[in-house]
Structure formats: structure tokens, C-alpha cells
Length: 289
Ligand code: DGL
Image (cartoon, rainbow, N blue to C red; front, side, top):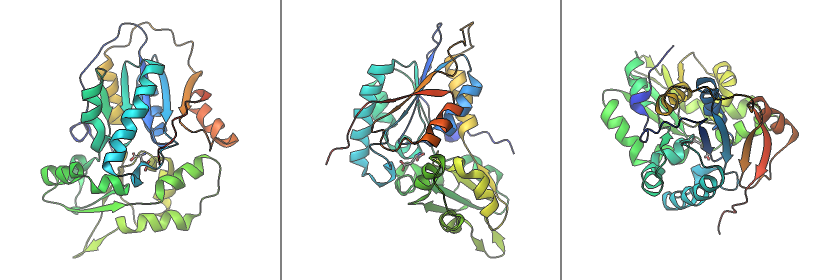
């Protein structure tokens, strides 16, 4: 099902570079790869830099004040290093909180990803929708505001998963992830009430689409899963403007930057290469405390 998510996603102001544009895709870990994949498809001419704040992962456990400080600190380093024309905050946990501070600090546009509550409310037939996200995202005032504005007529279940992002990371690193562990995280999304049941689940953490095939298989009944990545990529392409005649000869040598690099396994390097990220680098930014 095609769903237009733009109204549920926040973005910065446009910049249209004439030369080959650089897009920095940022997440706490590997979830942003699901957005990067779509961004590359939408703008194959762009130079893509992927950055994972793995020293700060998972963001879902940080307090709001810690998270704002952390993202600003890491972004200073990444912007100075890669000079992006546009940054994708490919992380709901950060986007639902930090975008105003980032836009106040930097002049480049920031495209964020926030829970797709508006499109979920538009397509549900049963009226029961679930927002599957990190504990941080479900606790945000921003998320509550989206529900009040766009889904007041729906029965919205907020599911703050403590383990699913880490399970997705483990799977991408080549570790065995038990079906039962995934099933347990999904279970609260599936609600039956007064003869109706949940029919839409928003994947409101960018890590979750990494497990989508397994989640479909493990779900107690079929639902529509909303992955916002294609809509974010369309918005990125729109902000960058028409692609020029930029050479695409550097495709496949894009860098992946980690703030710790402690968990980089052989299978992960292979997975990163599958996204065109063949240069793996560390920009050390230890988490304070
Ligand atoms: N990928 C991040 C998101 O979209 C969250 C993972 C984390 O807790 O750091 O929310």
C-alpha cells in the first residue's frame, strides 16, 4: 500500500546545490540504513555519508536533556568533517526532540523522521492503530501532539519497545536472534477490542524495518506496516532539487562513520557494503558519565 507520509514528517528549509550534493544520514546506530537505502534510490547522484552514534546507542534510554546535548555534540563533529548539504536525522527518538535545537545551531536543512500517525489514522478501517517505537519516542510530547492533532478519533496504542532496536542491530551484525524475542516485543501492538482489532502498525524507529520480513511472519494477524523511509527520501530529493549531471563514479565508496566502532563485525561490514558503504571509519565521541 502506498501511503503519503509527508504531513507526518518534519523538515528544514530547502537548499539546492549545483554541484554533487552530500547527504549525511545520521542515526544512533544501524537503523538509519533503512532510510539511507531509500535516499540512495531517490538520489543516486548524491554523495552519501552515513553516521552512527554507536557510542550513544540506544538513544531510547537517554533523558531528553542528555539526548539534546549528545546529538548537538556529535553533529558538530560530523558537520565539520563531512560538510553536508543536507542532513537526515534518520532516528525518531532524536527527531521528535532535537530538530529545533539542530535548526537553531546549523544553517543546513535537517530532514527528520517522526511517527507516521497521520497516515495511519487515514488508512485504518478498524480505528485501532499501534505506534511501535522506542520508550523515548512514545514518551515525547511531540508524539502525543501528533495523536491529538491527527488521530483523536482513533484508538492509538503506544508501544515502547526496550529491545527491538538492539535485536535489529544484532541481526545485522550476523548474530542469531530468536523469533520469540521479536514476537514478545510485537505482542502489545496487537489489540482486540469490542470485536475490532489493530490493522495498522507504524514502524516509528528506523531500526524496525530491518526486521520487517520477520515481523510480518511473526504477527498474530496481518496488518499494514508503515515504514516512512520512502516518503523521507522523496522529501530529500525535493529539497535538493533536480539532479544535475553529477558523476556517479564514486558510488560504492561511501563512508560509514561510527563514534565508537566497538561492534563492527565481518557480517556488518558486508551489510554496510550492500548499502554502498565500503569505507568504515571511527570518529571517537565517548558518551560522558
Ligand atoms: N533508530 C532510532 C529511532 O528511529 C532508535 C534506536 C535507539 O534507541 O537508539 O528511533
